[in-house]
Length: 101
View 1 (spheres, rainbow, N blue to C red):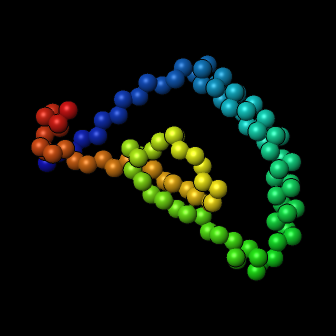
View 2 (view 1 turned 90 degrees about the vertical axis):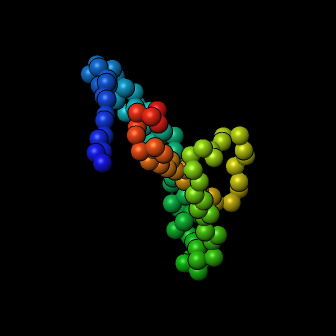
């Protein structure tokens, strides 16, 4: 059995990549400045918390699901929750990639 991986790459033109990099840098600065007051309040609040109190906090719920289960159509849950979506690739059924396309 021969297994061959193929990658086709179309590089972004350098000028577009540089402009995109500049845009991302500006956006990072805007977000950094906008979230700074919240970050400072959170730091001040967290310094006042005791280790005993922190140990009683509810742990986040970690859920694993396949990427086809993702939907943006549901409301957020108030409890800490994180869902990791995964994509599982299975080998072709026939063993012949030309037939499985």
